[in-house]
Amino acid sequence: MTSPAPKKAIDPAPVKLPREIKVLIAAAFLIAIGFGIVAPVLPQFAQSFDVSVTAAAVVVSAFAFTRLVFAPLSGVLVERMGERRTYILGILIVAASSAACAFAQDYWQLLIYRGLGGIGSTMFTVAAMGLLIRLAPPEARGRISSLYAGSFLLGNIAGPAVGGLLAGFGMQLPFLVYAGALVLVALLVATQLHAVKPVAGSGVAGSAAGGAGAPAAKKDALPLRQALGIPAYRAVLTSGFANGWSAFGIRMALVPLFATAALGAGPEVAGISLAVFAVGTGMALTFSGKLADTWGRKPMILSGLAVNGIAMGVLGFTGNEFWFFLVSAIAGFGSGLMGPGQQAAVADVIGNDRSGGKVLATFQMSSDFGAIIGPIAAGFLVDAFSYGPAFLMATAVAFLSFLFWLPAKDTRHLLH
Image 1 (cartoon, rainbow, N blue to C red):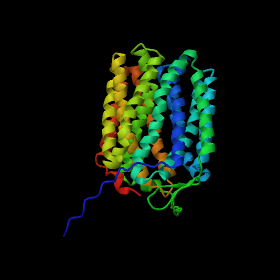
Image 2: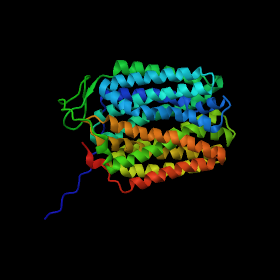
Image 3: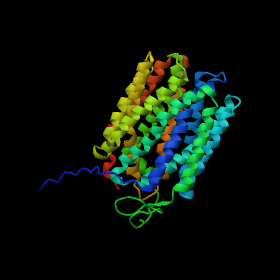
Image 4: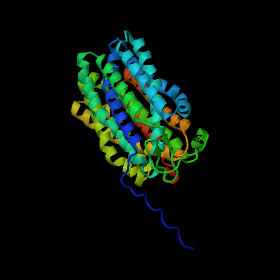
């Protein structure tokens, strides 16, 4: 018997972006600028109401908590209303929430207003993920995920630095600027994004704006139970949790407070540190998506978990601004290594010829759950001990996910 021919590597040919993906990338850039402007200010604005570090961290977690609670509903709304309408409505809800935060008169008002924004956030996030999966060619999912994530990072690089400067004119101003940016996003999507339909063949999606291929017969939605039967999907839920704990929880809630309390720096340094994290992530995204399409999703996720986990643990022991910025950049680099691989792995499981609202929502919930638990647990550790143990918890969570990924099979064999 002749041995089977080795599996041919996927050719990393240049990606031709559908028009709708370009619109989503532009919208993501505007969202990220606004979010980045608010990020370094929010914990300090909460503390201006004379609350503890833990209470300030809860404000960050409130946003993720409502995202977690309403994620299943978002999946249903996407299937019933369509991605475009769900996206626009979600953006407008977050805009209203941000504007309300600027006028909060006490801590509890800020907590409620910020939490309500999470409802809209999970709506447009799940809708955007669904659109990207349907539009992206299967052989280029990693690279398109990199491009989409890169648009967020360009905004995140500029946003935190601008937010720190705007805080000098009052902590309410960044929230109003964020609300304005989101209104622009809603207008962009409403006027430029058209309905999309998956097409048969390579998986490239056509649209109302044009696209090759005849519409494929729509399959039934992928049941969550079936997805949970795939070890790689269970593993990606753990890495999503770890990334939420680190990149969206600890980084947003504790890093600004650490810069002030441990380094004696102001909001400007906190903003720059968040921007530096984004720069590190952006550097990794220049190649991590391509490698996820050629080497596989698993190697990139494992590498990212290791680099990000170690760096986040070291961050709490930095004693001056130079090391603080350097380690922040390394942590961001690790996050950029794993990001495209995670998105591509979820897309591999779902495929682009069927809906996966519940599967997408569950993946989003894993990240949000990490973003909720991370800041609260870390806040307790800071109040009881110091910042060092709080940051080391992120290392422990990352390496627990690392262990889940080791026996899992890469999802590239599921390409469809």
